[in-house]
Image (cartoon, rainbow over all chains, first blue to last red; front, side, top):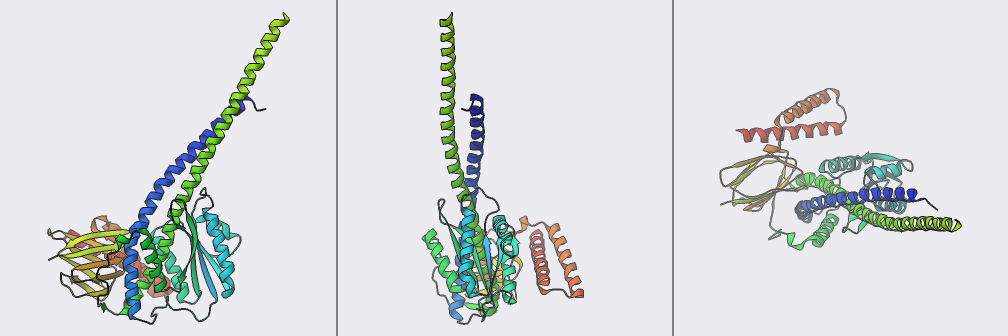
Length: 299
Length: 139
């Protein structure tokens, strides 16, 4: 049986752990709020961009941009796995990694070769020893990070090094649910992006749409083709930015949930330890009394 | 008559409100929009943006590549980034411009990869846009 002192020390240590987990929970909650705001802030941009892309797409049947064109031969697929930098967020990262492994197994055969790039430390750490990583990007959701990744992919696609690109990340569904998902990045498809953004916008806030009037006969300057040259890289960049944002919000939500249950577990642990502490104390008191009484009788 | 202007970036709405006029760095040269402008869609290059607000105040901002949709009495500007003049550090922008210029000249001499060249070109035009926006606002 543990001594009183041991149990006391144990309780003290569990209490310290509880302080840490509950502080982490609160920090995650604050960060989650900020990450959610960033997702909402990106919405008007997404709507406008995809609406315009759709308008041009309607007008021009041909995919007049190298990133929109499918390659004749599917040789190499690049899979971008997005995870967080830090752990302590439940199964969040391992869900994304598992999904990545599954996609590689499923889509791999159609391509000759699958290469990987990662964003966030957890994905890098996992795949480093298992597969070849073309490039690992810093974690964190910023437009600069998204631009860097978009440039990397676009350059490789246009030069023919890769014939397709996929991004795997956790979608932030709600504070309680994050769903791993895989989106095709390249070849970029205007219709697919529009459908997805419409779905996302509808789920969020139907009142947000303000396109008003709709099909106005545009005058396009300099040309639809020149505009596509600007729009298409922007759309790719944005698709990546969105994945990074979702990942970020999801990470904080997952950490919040994990820390909440950890805090609850420490409470339970403390309750049990306190009970044990009291029992041991009572037993010691009883033993002492018995000793005193029997000592007195012996006289 | 005012034009409704909204400047949107992936990070959120940078500006929203009515303006007397707006001047944008179009892909084929700077152009201005007043109320009643013809409906059109155009690409923008990195450069300085000017919004003349009804009170006589003028806002200056450096924008990156993007596009603008003009709808008669409303203008929607979609760009990757938009920095207002007061957020720009002019000295840093000048240093960045000089550095990018030097790198571009070196490249011209050695003829290295195209990717790096584009990167420097972009750095250069971004720095120029910042300088232009910041200098215009000081006048």
